Amino acid sequence: MSPVQNPQDPLLPIKGERLSAWAVAAAPLLILVALGVALGGIGTGFAAVLAIAIAGWPIFWLWRQARITRQPTPPPSTGMPPPAAPALGAPVIDGLPDPLLILNGRREITLANRAARQLLGRTLTGRDITFALRQPHVLALVDKALVSATPGETELNLLAPVSRDFHVLVAPLQGAPSAAEQPAAALSLHEITEIRQAENMRADFVANASHELKTPLANLVGFIETLKGPARDDAQARDRFLDIMQTEAARMSRLINDLLSLSRIEQDEHMQPATQVDVAGLLKGVARLMELRAEKQNLRIELDLAEDLMPIRGDQDQLIQVFQNLLDNALKYSRPGGSVQLRARPVERLPRVGGTGILISVQDHGEGIPREHLPRLTERFYRVDAGRSRRMDGTGLGLAIVKHITLRHRGWLDIQSEAGQGTTVTIGLPLYVEAG
Image (cartoon, rainbow, N blue to C red; front, top):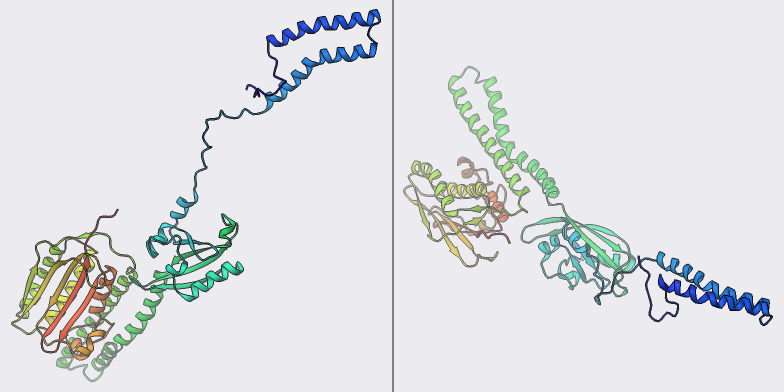
């Protein structure tokens, strides 16, 4: 490596020919000093000083040259500032699966990762934390972390667009980027919806199943005791009791299947389906499946589908289950000789949920439902006429399943009915939109 040269330095490095020239020039000077001493014109001490000065200059240069050479050579100047080190913080934080917010001392959001923007909105940075989360117990933890540097944790429930549960952790941060932003805190949300739903479903299943299964099980026990006792040799009674037992066992089987189906739907309710579904083809297929049932009851299924129906975003199997349940209910409560209408039309804006979509309705012309019962129809096991529902093999879970599938699809459900006029159930589903 070559030494760095400074044009202002009087001690320029002497290289090659310069060193040889200095040696040639120094030799006569040393001879003159020696003659001066011999003739007595120069004192011995002074002559020694001159000789050391003349001969020592190259030695000093060699020492200085070696020292400069050992120093690293800086890169040549380009007139441009050195490139900044790559910022790895934002990409790493964006890659985290859990929502994360970084707050400054004024409770303003200075950084929000991708998961947080998807959950709480895209315009978070620079806003107060209350713009994203308004729950007092969460804000209290944030204040505590900022004021006293004390971490804390709690749970949070967000209701829109569907109910979701999160474990919230608030932790103070040391060493904020600038003094103006100190103190700082980090707030992370870890979703525990599936855990809470599993706990709730387990409790609901035990409570509901025990209540609904109690009567048919009691009937089965009574009939078995009768068949083992007084009716042991009564063939006519035995056949009648066995028919009833078969009916009760089938009812319990339907009930358990509906409960399991509802549990699976609720477990996935927070995850919106992402596949494309041909709604016209789906509705035509469901109508064909129910045609035989309608013919047995002397009813007709009338399809009224718009020609310009676009694909919707959904789970095809679950949507088939929805419209089978709705058509099944409509056929059960329609008068013989009548008809059930299945309609679908596009809309520019879905009621309540917004966005473009398709409205699908199932209308019957049966006895209808009194208005006071409408708000509770989608509750589990709620029946307007419990006795009639059981006689028609109903479990009281059909509309609850319809509601939860609709919620999973981020859709809209509406039930309109009048006693003696029939019932219309309408579902709004969003159109399929390509990602990105």
